[in-house]
Image (cartoon, rainbow, N blue to C red; front, side, top):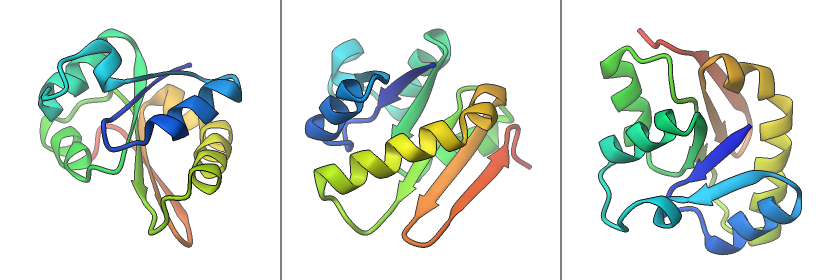
Length: 121
């Protein structure tokens, strides 16, 4: 499975995920640094990649469009420590792999993980 990390996901977190064996690019690797959320969604869909982001707008865009792809890991955690965050993301990617493969929004906060299959609504 491929992943596309939004600009708001630290380069160091992406490096840790790559070291752990995940196929992950950052938006800046594929698009202009000022790419819109719509452009990022299109790029992820084109590359069959799951978006990883702290940006809450992606959930809204997916819900409004009725899309079944791309999947999204929506990070709503209060911490930013590289090791802690990269370990959490890695664990979530493994635990929700089937859902992400089928099309889903996986929302992660400090206390729980919520999975909503796409399309939303």
